[in-house]
Image (tube, rainbow, N blue to C red; front, side, top):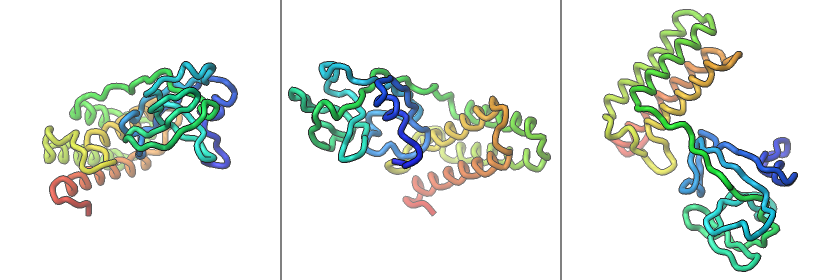
Length: 222
């Protein structure tokens, strides 16, 4: 945990307040990947009565000098057996170690079809270009990102758009949706990042598509 940025869940729960935390879009969900999804919003509430806690609850708990978000697997009196979503047992904690539990999970916006995503991405790129007043060359670079992603979509075929190339990797469709939402959200900002930012990140998405092809067809990433 950073010395300078306190976890907002910890900060709120220590003050006896509920807090809604959004699961980051990027990164590895690690041992909780079977319980939560990227983009979900989780509402944590302080525990006023230990009888509120049920087996299967996601809890925010003190663990070995830190804090983790794990599952309650078993309850014996005021002792709670903590485990991750993959079935690994952490151990037992007393009730006072549980700072809060998840009372509500809100799923993220449903993703459209991949062709619709790419249409949204192209529209967002054009809007960002208009806002930036950048030159035509930058616009063409952005459009080559969309063209390349469409080429990879055709090469993969719709049956592989959602195929996970290996554990803890995103599918082609998941990557495109992440970058599409990023660009689309930026169009609503009064001061979006410079156009070069989206060129660089668009090329990153194309590179991820090439890596997925390498993993699926050749068994390794080059």
